[in-house]
Length: 137
Image (tube, rainbow, N blue to C red; front, side, top):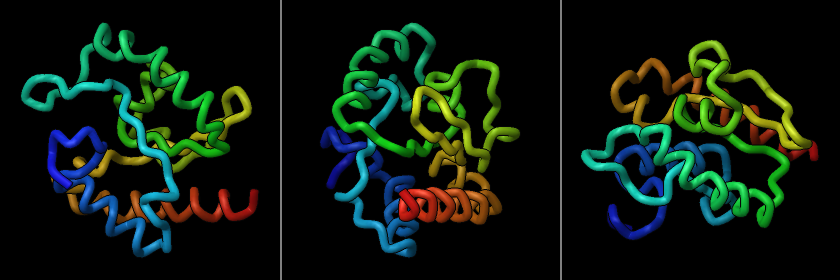
């Protein structure tokens, strides 16, 4: 898969996420991955508020169709746009948050792991926790 293929997380961050999936016995095809914005902002910067807001109805429709029991929020952009600006990724990471019948667990964005390898342990723990919770459902 190539960047620009329309498939989320296919670059280095996605490869790192795929390795975590393999380690946990998760098939990428068994999970649904969606981005906050549906097109990449210039220079791969974080989306601005108006860009994220323009895509939220589409994302809500995706969630309604998929009907997830658990959503793993990857990074502060996902956390703030889904659960609100009152959350910060450092303090919310690894903690379960229930909203509208869906359990959320925020964790580091895989790109953050490329910049700071010490976050890989937390990322692994959070994905493992999400898998354990999903296996219980």
